[in-house]
Image 1: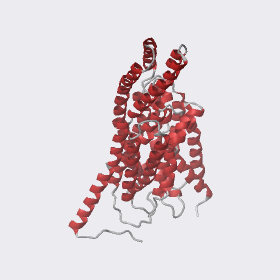
Image 2: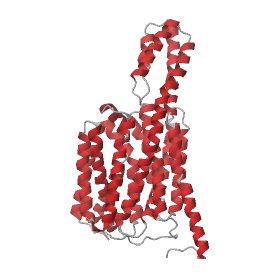
Image 3: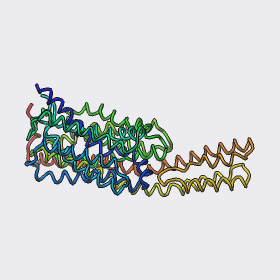
Image 4: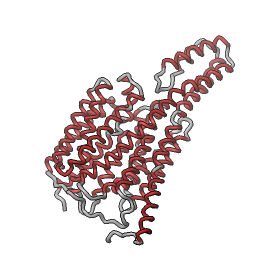
Amino acid sequence: MRDRPYLWQNLWVRLAVALAFADASIVVLALPEIVDHLHTSISHVVWVIVAYNFALIVGAAAIIPVARRVSSAPALVGGLVVFGLASIACGASNSLAALIPFRCVQGLGGALILCSSLTLFAGTAREGDSALVGWSAAAAIGAAIGPAAGGVLTQLFTWRAIFFAQAPVAAFAAIAVLAARPPSAPELPAEPATERAELDPLTANVALALLSAGLIGALFLVVIELINAWLVSPIGAAAIVTTIPVATAVAERLVRGRSPLLLGALGAVLVGAGLVLLSLVTHKAVGIVVLALALCGAGLGLGFPGLTAAALASRGVLAARAAKTIAARDAGLVLGLLLLTPVFVNQLNSAPNDATKTAAGYVLIAPIPFSMKGELATRLAAAVAAAPVSRPPDIAPAFDTVSATATPSQKVTLAALERQLNDIIERAATHVFKRPFLYAALLALLVLPLLAVRVGLGRLSESSSGTSPRRSPR
């Protein structure tokens, strides 16, 4: 039975893992506000996410060759200190040029946290617990809960609160580690396996990267759709996106003892299905989005822990194994952002022209005087020109001005026309996300042929060697 300080320290290590993984996506719901406050664009502000994940990859890769000489507890405390101080600096940044470098520093701190935490986690896990599943489950829930937490903080305070709030969490985690003085485990305790090792670490890491790339659709694009296209408030979007961590937490309870191959395939199918469902949405339909996010969250809860556990189940120093898996996972996130953002921005740039042409046709055929049509068209054009690139135009003031001098029957016509144009704008804004969601689904579903090839090669190897599948000892 572990001493109480070790149990508390284990909880704080879980929280540190969740915090570092959550930070990869926690700023998503704040991106629209950052765009406005720092006077930038979606295509530029996406580097707030890319910078953190890229630095995490670099930091993890740098740890691999020196993993044997890294002392886990000091490394974790050092990572938490760097992460916390960088969080304060991010919150105090007044320009994108300052924010992005501090996000890089945060990423380096996150790399230290994640690479050293698995060793401590294994050393303080309760008897009978799976260190691999526990660590990877904390990572999955952290990644899922990030956007919702960021949305609540942004709505209640400001985008800066996202970073300021992380500093005390990192500080308390560092204090807990120092107070407990936990043991570390150079190797994992034996896992009670029921099946042979059917998924090698390399395949699991590649699958994890592809699944992470696809999840950008659920963790990034859907948030932009809710806030920018449908004008949902950050806290409202946070409530909707909370579906992901809830579904993740429920699904990850089904992971223990299951085949990582099956979990990875099922996770990819669920994430892909959720993203395809999102691509089919043509207008504001919150119920469908919640269902789609539930599928993505369940896929994350199954696939992420299963693939992570398989990726980590190899020989060697725990910190080095963790570093490789962290690098693979974040490489997937960066890949997804770099592939999907240009597609999204291209669709975003073409949407106003398409919507304007359709809207102009409705204005021309509206049963109102020609002079009123001319004034309305002029004011609508001004509203479109004044709207930020990433947000639909606000046409209400134009209709309010024209309606002020209209007759009662004309006001009824103008109100109906306003509803029609708002529907056109909403559908055009929603259509922007169709292709990026489909591409994200494709990235996630690429896990399936990868795993199929692995199974085929495994069977071919067994048949050529004339051996039967090995079973783990009961």
